[in-house]
Image (cartoon, rainbow, N blue to C red; front, side, top):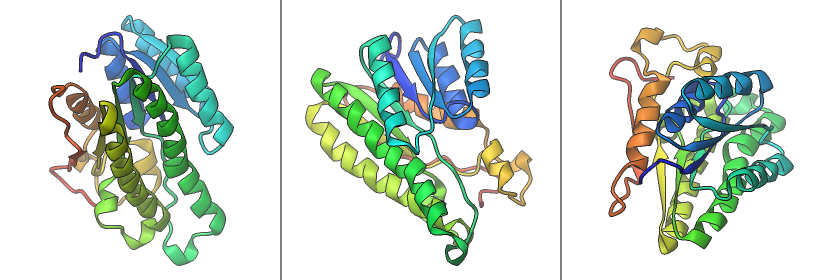
Length: 239
């Protein structure tokens, strides 16, 4: 895909992996729509994109709310006329074992990590179907490949992301839309640091490493699609 001029929506774009993807897509010529819950973080991302001559629309939204998901899609299409690329990156971690996880924590995790992805992907897919082109990239996690006991809700939600990606792939391929799933290993983000991982950050990947993987997927030939990509840290890779 030629990225120049494409409209890319990035959720969880205020910091970490999402922020880096937004910066790199803007630098590649995309018109970016960056969503996050923090207005201050969005202002910083927009300023960083503007400094490189890029174009960004920021949308402050709590994607656990269905109305916020619809508003994000509406604003992207109203501003730029289409959604060419959707990066479903928004996510939260509540580091608790299953028996200590409350119903509210479970529902909140799935609302952001899965439900928002489902709703936003449906909106984007409908727009992409009309034009018979587009790309959806979903961020799962290597945690989905072996869920640790202390990350019950997060791990289950990332397994759900992987399954939903398969459904989106099977749907989108009928009208020329690509869908890929990226399973990042441990990456140096504030979210990972906040859960108190014992290993040293020097052993972790950086957001740039995951962003490079996403851009690799988007730039593949129209003749092929890489359905799954699993970037592992070459150092310690266990949350």
